[in-house]
Image (cartoon, rainbow, N blue to C red; front, side):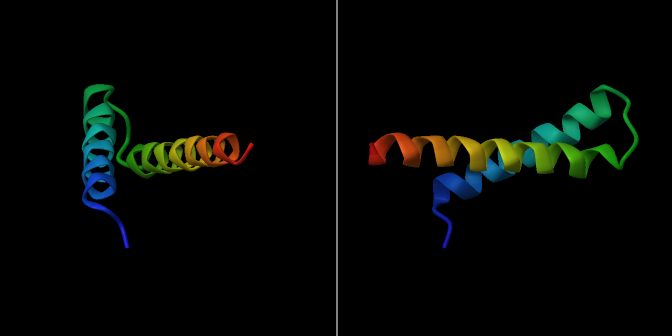
Length: 55
């Protein structure tokens, strides 16, 4: 289950993705791309933090 902090962070990033799409006047299909990029970045940073703590 997700923590409240993770849910809040996800919501903020989703809003940022929608705002970036609107402000940069991109097509609506760009929003899922931003969300996928944010998700990939989050997974990468989580992997790095986990890897560093194991060493």
